[in-house]
Image (cartoon, rainbow, N blue to C red; front, side, top):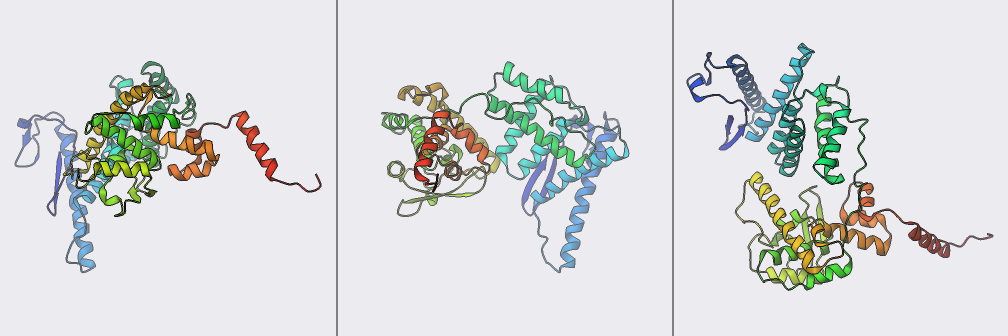
Length: 410
């Protein structure tokens, strides 16, 4: 573990080397020569120390050149620099020795660490999980980047779907994360081939229709008599609020603050945790009733699903993740109680988003409107939400078209 102390900030980089305390010389801050693999580990420590010293020296020189009285940086920036340097050392070693092969999992660990340092904890958890699942598939064996093959990726995908019973979308995301990690490695190692280019993986969402509720389901869930103040009551309220709040994600509902709602309770302005983009939604009567229900119960967060004193970004991300799991557990029970059309076991927080998208499209047939509501970056994602246009719907829309268009002379 390397600890960085800078301007009262403290950050740590996991060194991922385990040694017995008796083998470490506290005076020199290096391993004793008698320790196993001491030469290699001490060399790594020297590299990190040299990189750190060079970075700080450059900062001081920059400050003096610009006649600044303060070095403008943070411990986070130093940590990112050291991570970059560590990867660069791997690149240099490979150039010196073409037979040297960097481990896929070591590179993946560096990517996970980069996400943690940048406080992108949602991605950090997903990348770490995807890497662990792939390592489990290989029964704990390591694999060098050049040794990853298309057949191995296809076998892994079939393992996820056939043996682990992952849904197509879950399996697709797991493989897509591995592809993203590998292609970042390709940027650093241009001679690597691309084993993901010819994989036999179905397009995302191809194996099943996305589940959606109908209007009677929303009414039934809203009308349920649940114990006042219970967690299941709160989960129901968050689900309904998310549905009317332009199909917001559950993480955004967990983080919804009173400061995000204007004084007259007519507009919600929130920043989506996933994309960082700002969203404004008109407060519908159903939303207003829920806000009145929770008024005065928390100073910061509307629903009070997480403590108000969480300041560490990683702890906050983990708490959001565990709270989402509890909400989804409640929603399965709510689905059973309300006897929803898709079956209670299929209820989860994201269905509020799917359902709104489906209802809007059924009434407007405006795909771009649905895309704008869901804030999708790619209209193909919206198409997955609303499903394919069936033949009967196509005939109806063409009839409407010809009725509104007059062709002179035809």
